[in-house]
Image (cartoon, rainbow, N blue to C red; front, top):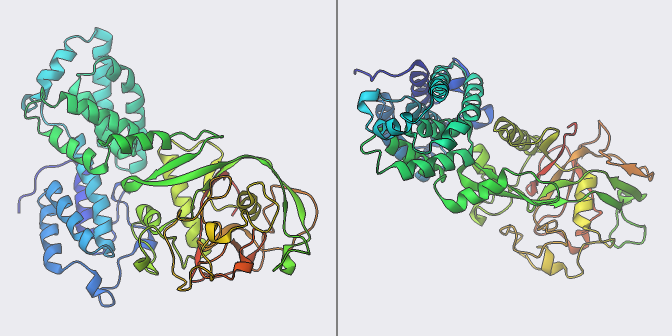
Length: 486
């Protein structure tokens, strides 16, 4: 078979997608990123009923091998919808996205680009210094296209986006520049820039005639949701980390992860000896100062939110629906989710310096749970705020957010599953503390909250447990706050 001529980086991506279907890791530069160990292809013998049929995979391989990435992407999406647990398809989807984006960065020759008639009108108005800047930008984009690693390519594309801003704003009809900004935004996962470029390209669409690049670019932007005004409005809020205001982080595929801003303050951690149901390890009580505000997940992380970032979700309790909390989570799995989210937001240039996505400390969790209250729980009517053995005899999970939140807007602090904390377990000192984080070594990590069939007496803000392994009901919620040592 004669393969179409493509840049080396694109050929590498195509090869990675091809070999990815076989469950193999392709050695080479970072453009052909291997899947993480946690997303290894499942055993065919053990999960044959969960995998896409071989005939369909052969068809998909043939499309990739022929360079027909759009058709391959459509087929892969259909197969993934039918076989969501086939991690070969998940990996291939990511690699096909890169291939489509790399194709978009490969401009057709000037003579075959009718949209350059439109661009030409803009180019004719460029001053001599602007012409020099324009040519330098095109050269920078070509240099990024030829980069051999993802890190190098993204560095060059960020430079391109910064340096092309002024010229793009002045000449809104400079079609080639806007196409390159759209492609660069997709590589950088810059939703706002991609949506802006997509909107401008749609306006240029009629004038662009039969430009071969434009339909593919717009189709890819649409597939990402970047041409949807509602999605983009959420994304614009998500790019802002404003202390004092709630925040939404947009996960892949437009899945929101909502956070509530928690102001700094003081509270008494633990429970008094007279509290009903109290355990020995809830005292002596301590005066605790939380010196910095932070964002805390409005709900526990759900199956949908976990899958959006990692490409799969825990297989347990999936029958309860995609909006129930994740469960059976090991502490390390929860911490890894946070680290991956931190890396993603830092790479996109969105996360402020000194902040990270992480698990809450035990003190942060209890402080946020109490929401200024001092009793056993943040509301007297337990049925209104939590699932427990008295109102959930089956013990099944329910979608998050169905119960009333506390005064600070947090849902399911009880009844949404046990939630891992950052700390190792240790006894309370009884001394006043500022931003405590527990001992560096302990019996296991702490978890807070209650599971959906918990005894009502245990639904208390001060209740604490620890473990060195997961439980059926162990999940987590995420903090955006000051970097802490794990």
